[in-house]
Image 1 (cartoon, rainbow, N blue to C red):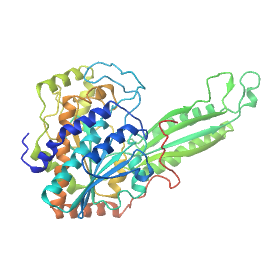
Image 2: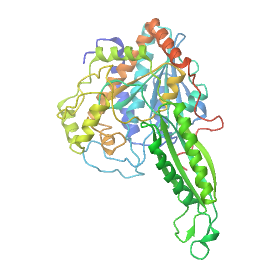
Image 3: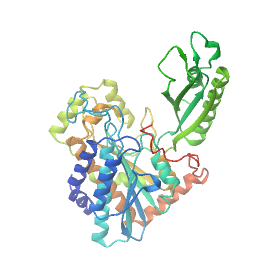
Image 4: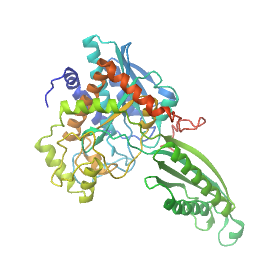
Amino acid sequence: MQNTEEIWRFVEAKAQDAIGLSDRVWGMPELCYAEVRSCAEHTAMLEAHGFRVTKNVAGIPTAVMGEAGEGGPVIAILGEYDALPGLSQEAGVAEHRPMPGDGSGHGCGHNLLGAASLLAASAVKDWLAANGVKARVRYYGCPAEEGGAAKGFMVRAGAFDDVDMAICWHPAAFSGVNEAVSLANTRIDFSFTGRSSHAAAAPHLGRSALDAVELMNVGVNYMREHMPSDARIHYAYLDAGGIAPNVVQGTAKVRYLIRARDLVELNGLVARVRKIADGAALMTETAVTTKVVSAVSNLLANTPLEEAMHDNLLRLGPPQFDDEDRAFAREIQKTLTDDDIAAAFRRHGLKVERDKALCDIVVPLDAQGSGGVGSTDVGDVSWAVPTVQARGTTYAIGTPGHSWQLTAQGKSGIAHKGLVHVAKVMAGTAVDAIVKPDLLAAAKADHEARTAATPYVCPLPPDVNPPIRMSAD
């Protein structure tokens, strides 16, 4: 990899700072809206690098924004740093070896995500100053991507109102431009209230809230046959009513996660699930109340920005891994199935190569992946401003998302090299948009055309606030 462009040299100059940040955040995994120390680490680095820092963005204690530069267009670079429960794992070993502690771990690579984005923003800041260019770059430290919809709340609060474009990325098995496909979703808590009674002596006097939840689940499961094939519905019990089988459960609560291709389809599914909940309450003579916890929009593409990012990837080339990286990747692959590895290639629209452990290509821009699709609150940013997202290689091909194997690779040479590589891609894309006014104009025109028929409407109800205590409840 040749640092032939000035902006890449600015990335290299602060690469070790970013790697250190990533490793520290990996070592302090914090869940949705509880990323206090992780946010503090990002804030400290923003201050150390000379950014103008705004804390408590959108009223969220673990959201931060750093700005640098004056005048001109505003380029936002988005970072994340939340972890996941149940994915604790020792770094650098290819066997399941959980760490002591609360069981959380960075099984989606968000320790890398935030650090690389901050590195890209710092490089653009230094490039602006060195060249006397009028523009502003902002790093947005965004919490709670894993189910908390923080970016949606930030968009709703106006945090991106004066932004001209946004750039972000996500750890992956291959390097390329992210295909702008994701599912809109919402999380809704259904709370049933019945009447407790002695389950043997007076069961006829009780009205079971647990029965209501189970009937709701049965109804939703029957509905699966009659909904779009790429929609998804999941649920988890938050309160099963207690642990005593000789008591008719008077309360029970279930959280539903409903996903669909877009907001219109999502709203239709939500209405059907609500009817099923009402029916379950009617059948059991219980009462049901609902509370929306979070909601996100589907991703909106932007062709000019995707082409510009792909051009940066082609100029830079794929990440350059060494023999030690490839050996560790092969050890990780020994813990995976053939289906895991094949699915990774197909997800990126690539021919399956079972003897390949690490990415050595740039995924073609027109590659069309197949397989499951997830959700992200980047979707709401993409409806608010022109947005482009990269995929950066940081782990072995076949590594499942949200897995201990991904956590195990979070401090590896693979992860560190991938972090720096994708920071160069993002920084280069930002500079292109600054120095090429036609590119930014084309991106805005593309965005306006995509939203003309269906303007953005935030999927979060106006009375729903960020669930700051989401991980504590």
